[in-house]
Image (cartoon, rainbow, N blue to C red; front, side, top):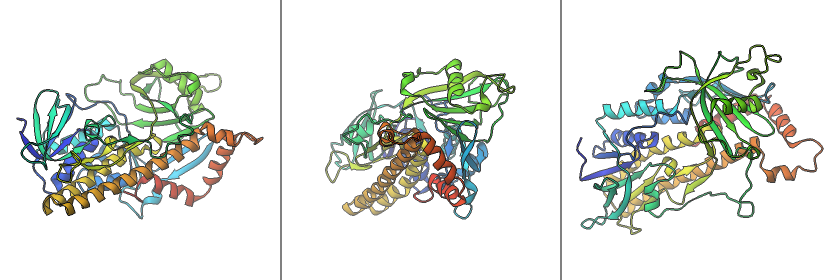
Length: 446
């Protein structure tokens, strides 16, 4: 398909948020949409793995939720252990009065992208690759449009731009929008907890492991460990001899030094030995059913960070007549992976941006229509800040920052023991389990 010289809406980034934004715009009757992405093809790694009820509700409005649910694994509860003892369970079945999707859906991100990409093709929307944004300037003829230039030398004139191009967003940077932690403490810039650096890996085992639940976490003094099965295979990947692929995510204590860029079989096995459930220990004397990691399908490391764009809406060039620019997904906000909130919030950003831009188009560009679009994006920013606050609380409760540990230095009982007691006691309440499920689901603030 030939690349157009102009477009009504340019969507930069064809990850989950960008594709969902295009589908949302199309659903609202916007047909002149151009989607570009900087890479030759979509990412086949799994990365994000959980889709929440509020996100599925949003995707349902775009006629894509059923196809996504069909490919995933429904999880009705998530349990938290101290390596061997159940501390707390989060019950998602309590969401039934509020949603048609009362569960967590486990689905690797590449499959989510595959389903969204198929829906784009059905709608006749093409993704142009590779088109890496390198410049933006106000159109010389129409000050309410922006000329976006690409690394390959081509350019396009757009009336609206949706930046869905990730945490290093060129759209955000070229628009002059800041990107900072909204709750950073300038007096404790290094106040990091034990989840400051993490490893995520998709692995297979020599034998099927014995698991306490489909999805569960293990809290220890130095780390937090997540374990769950995944739906595979990855398109184009090697055969895994019919073995189930499992996701592990583990905080790596700073005392261990930086993890390798692509953690190996041995490194993943060591994390399981130190921080995973004892049922997976390779000590045959203690656990006759022990298993070993046999292959690493995909792995990565990262440092956790919180940041939110200063504005999710701007007019390029700063003037009132400039082209509207909307930021969604990782281009607008990033935060720790606690609760799997990142991609979910981005997908809900994207599903909501279509009606907002379509309404602006229907009304015609004016100060009033821009004000409504700006108000909508301000609401999305408010929700992103609240999600960042939630993930910080979750990470802090699990990881225990040095500042928090210092406050309890006087206690004869270790702070981690107190944490585990609190989790165990809270887990006795069905109301607490249902309330946590509702908080995690996003239904309270879609």
